[in-house]
Length: 80
Image (cartoon, rainbow, N blue to C red):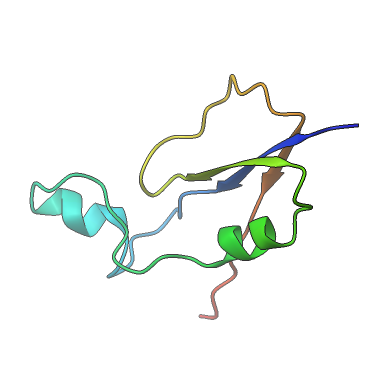
């Protein structure tokens, strides 16, 4: 039975006023002004016996060499 999961919140393909590119524009390290709660909500639904690793690509790139048993990718849909 799998016991580890790696959850990825992918980077947006467009700039927003709260994303990491705003910080980079002013010379600051990558950061998220407002956290996207989708990844933490999914993590909260994972059974307790799983080891959970979270990745927010707004901050750091995903570890494509992860040894996790399951990889999940979240998605946020914004209205135009």
